[in-house]
Image 1 (cartoon, one colour):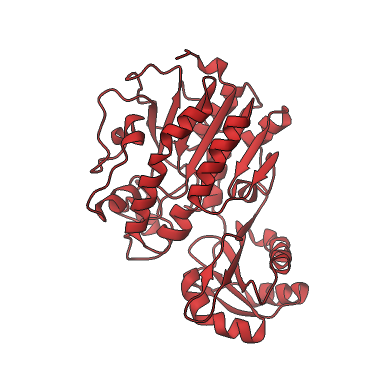
Image 2: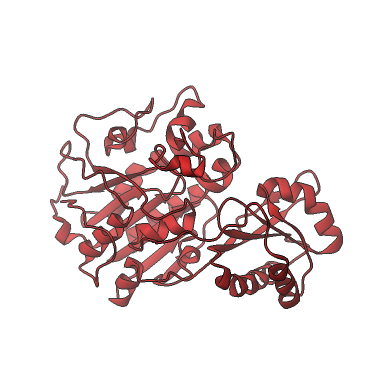
Amino acid sequence: MKTVTTHQIRKLLWLVLDSVGIGALPDAHLYGDEGSNTLLHSALAVGDFRMPHLARLGLGHLVDVPGIPREPGPDGHFARLAERSPGKDTTTGHWEMAGLVMKGAFKAFTDTGFPPDVIAEFERRSGFKTIGNYSASGTDIIRDLGPEHERTGSLIVYTSADSVFQIAAHEDVVPLERLYSACMVAREILDAHNVARVIARPFVGSPGSYTRTYNRRDFSMTPPGPTVLDMLSGAGIPVVGVGKIHDIFAGRGVTESIHTEGNRDGLIQSIRQIRDLDRGLVFTNLVDFDMVWGHRRNAEGYAAGLMEADSFVPGLMEAVGPEGMLIVTADHGCDPTAAWSTDHTREYVPFLAWHHGIAPGSGRDVGPRTTFADIGATVAALFGVGPTVDGEPMDLS
């Protein structure tokens, strides 16, 4: 095995397990999320839960979970990360990871729906009528309003506890390009209202058996400041976004985007992209944890997804090669056992790092860290790019 220092790292696979939180933050009570622990509660929902590979990298040092042993000599460096920005949404979590700490929260319209003038302007500019405009689970509102949407062609508009304007449409009623165009209209309108994301939610099927598809697209606000992605791409270093990374950053700093059809495809694509890359960053979001199991409060499915992702870890480690690094982390929680809502939960997230320069059994705790932005600062330092972002680099040698 070739020994490397972090100064010799040429490429990095940064894997975000979307919503895999590891316990409530001290301020979780402000969000109604006391007692949340996405990873633990998912594991407890099944009888035989095991994540041996991430345990070897140090995950058991960050959270006490049956099936994730606390290895006395882990092979990776590890840390528990707290979110400094207010909120618990995908955009805020990813931007902070990339070195941009938000000072204020995005605007949510959970209790009221969107103002009539916003809906009227959206209808006028998009050419569509709308139905809905209230806070709901996506699967529930599609079930309830799908038949009316099919009869009338009106778009289903809804929101949640997050700062999102979601637009659902049947792919046989509204072609994808028309749905995406309508989302871009909404994005232009909602910048002034500080709404984080407009999300296209296409679905197929018939009444009673509607199914959302992987043709989802997110239309985020543009980051209000620089991120490590800007610094890398500005220095001519490739940044490959796998999954919804391109959408979360409004395309900024991403030099190539790879569409995925769920977690397994995202992991396969990540292996392919990092193996073929000579130098640069592959930044992957695995959305099924959040979209398929977390929000739908399917703890058993969540646990199965965690074990599947863990089974890919040896292949990911092999793919990064002798001059590569693997980082595994998350952006927020979405506890599938949280009976009080179907939304995200305010939690700590794990950070695990591995490369060939870490001698087996010599991994160490590089935390705790008070902001996700320490990841972005670390990535900037690994590649020697600047100016600086928020956060402090971690010593991963």
